[in-house]
Image 1 (cartoon, rainbow, N blue to C red):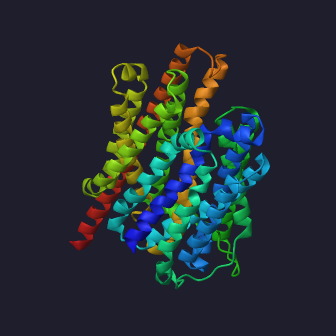
Image 2 (image 1 turned 120 degrees about the horizontal axis):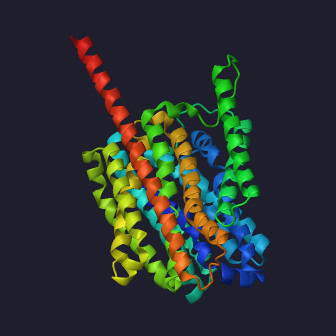
Image 3 (image 1 turned 90 degrees about the horizontal axis):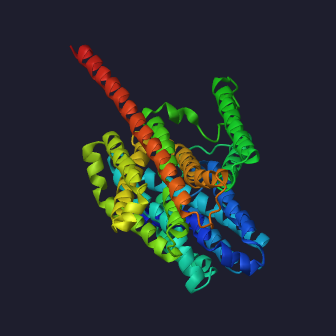
Length: 479
């Protein structure tokens, strides 16, 4: 059962992140089908991103009230239906609406299957499990543009959506025998926190929308949108704090319990996830852009290097048992250091292409990034008790979604901003300037990753001191 859930969860995460990036390389043919300018294609991209955020907070509440397998099956069927409707869309607005519904269905599906999978794992199995499901997710985000290009140039962009239907139906047939395993709901059914859901969903929509637009245009409106989203999150924190200190007998339980941040490992994982993803999530997309625009690679040629990153991530999966033996906290520090080195090497793109070493460094980057993903995601849940897994998983999903958007903004948005401020058009012949701006962004990403290493080292040192003090106290009591 656990193996079945594991590969299904991996495939669902792969589909979710593949569909996030698959449209980026086929904007022109899609726009031509709808008889609109390609600049207007930001609408369906934004719709999908908003969809993946809007109902994430409700996933834990749903999983506590209904059979998890039934929920996963239902959302997979809905996702396949809206994928089919995307494929037969006749105009931009219907396409954007179906993309929104797609995002809602797959985000709830992925959140609940992770909860179901983690609920079957012992603490010593979490690293292996997270390694198995995170690698395909990494591959989905890396090769999405390449897959989109292949479909749009050799078949049709519509096939990129039709292919989801048979895949989802196969997953449904594999899930149906597992219904009885999750048939009993062990937790008390709680009323829905409508106020908390509204605050969190609205904040996630505004932050995600702001980050998406910020990756294209850095302006006051987008920054203001993100600021409002952050203020709404702070409002939820104050509301949660008020409820926790209130003595009312009939108070509504908050939709997300923030007590989980008192867990030192979860706090450690949260900080490292945000910092590390900000440094590395946008680099594969930026690399593809620069290879095409500055070095005149075709979409397919650039896509091969992204595929190498994805393959390296799959290879790294087989080393996930070593993370437990070496120590998860130390593994985060080591893998973050190696990833920083890989980012630094990728900044020397001209040299790597000239000496045909780019594929080696891409492999190295994908390998180290995969190990870091596995280690830092495992830390989030390594010391969480089973009763708190749905809530912790939900918060972890929100953190990861936010961090991916932030990473794209730092890399791609920062690159676009540098070009704009220097009066360089991405399609202009200023190859030297484009290469220089790419180097600057890589140096920034390298700095962010080294800051991640420093933060991880400080967390580890503090935890070591706490554990030493606890051991010393236990020894004194024993005497």
